[in-house]
Image 1 (spheres, rainbow, N blue to C red):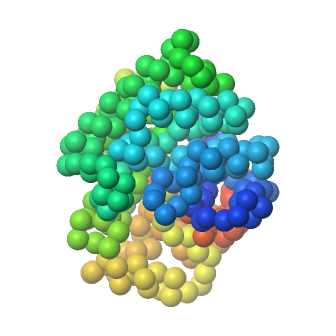
Image 2 (spheres, rainbow, N blue to C red):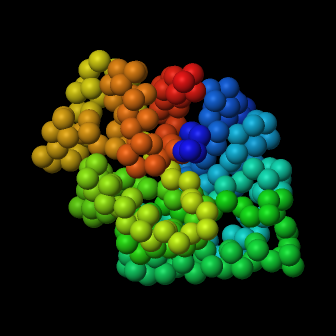
Image 3 (cartoon, one colour):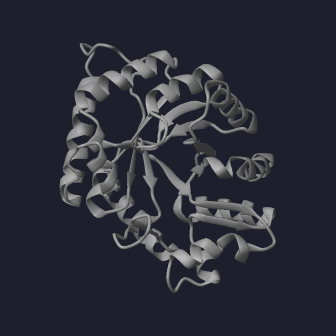
Length: 294
């Protein structure tokens, strides 16, 4: 039997305390299972925001999506994670990635490094967190016996690391593209097929299967998909409307079509944990509601 669906929302808009609490409560009311915070300069600081999110709500888990490993000393990160898990009554999910924005590292006065160096840094961080948080002697102690670890991955080495360590394998559905405005370009369905197949091969000897996550980049209920996708078409040279609509991380069209697309993501790739960005929180809730009616 497939895992039941879980849905997360990545909250990143800075807001006064009352507004932040209201946003978190609204996400809970809409049915989101996980309230997530990214790790970018210019956005909210992850751990204080998660504690505030947990205090404002009762049901959702809270998590990072995802921490830039280069921003964090592993020993200090273990302290932060254990403290937040304790303060949220064991609701933390810890998401980690290599980081992909060079300018952020430079502003922070931290080394960015080559792709290989960033993967090595993340590997050392994961191994140190496993050692520290898995030790009964480490203080402070988390509430959970194991804080679930999510790793955001796409490249071969990252998928290998994810297969070995992650409780949640998060697929970015994007690849590095240094010349683009964001540094990333979307993967098409065939490319994502290949990435998921490689992950499954690398994870074949796991005792327990990981949960598979996908970040949806664009969500819109509309009868005019071209109008919604025009900025993406302008951003990616040569991408046609038909190709854009077929991208796994794009969910644009009539409501019933989107519901079927989400079911298709589960059937084709095994994605049962889907994350949306904060601007799409309300509209994706319509899709969630239909999926939970079935």
